[in-house]
Length: 226
Image 1: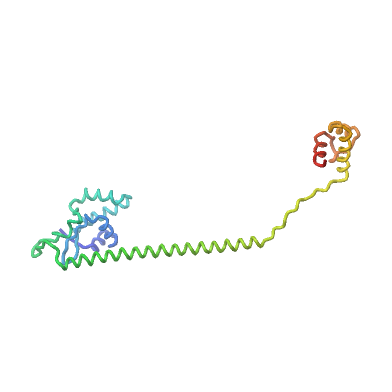
Image 2: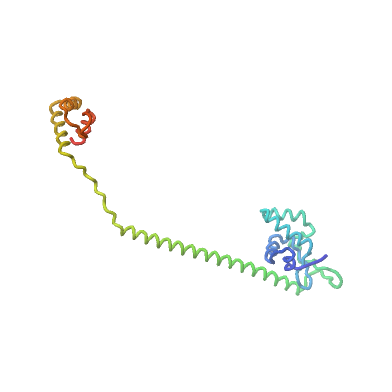
């Protein structure tokens, strides 16, 4: 069986080392390393096939739990619980008859774990810096808009809007005469109907100069100027 490292797996899968390490973190039971010359190696063909499959499953919007169930069914040959890994997983061919991890291999494993942890911290700080910058940009925009609103408010305050005075319509002398005549006739006991008949009989000119007098027109004049 051919074994290889994560960087070579990344080349074969046409993706980054970080992508494969993320898969390894999410599905550790399927990345059972074999230590060769102090370096973690993985079965090339089957691991590469699984990596491509995981990527396709994520593109199909499956979650981690769903993907793990599929891997447990299709990649049983790669499945080794994490608690059972790193022991008795070194090839026992030729002179390499080992049942436990030696000190050199242990140091290599710790070094790789520290490198992965450093990458995670670096990415975390980078994301935090980006979020902080976005918040600062947003705060600046809010402050700029607030200043613009204050400036607009001051401009509005400085504008003096002239008060609109109500227009008083002038009453013609003739209209006043008619109103006065209506009041006199009302006081004498005539109704508005009788007054209209009287005006029309005496050919008193209407306010518009045309038509005839009617009780409605007289009522409007009398009520508004009583």
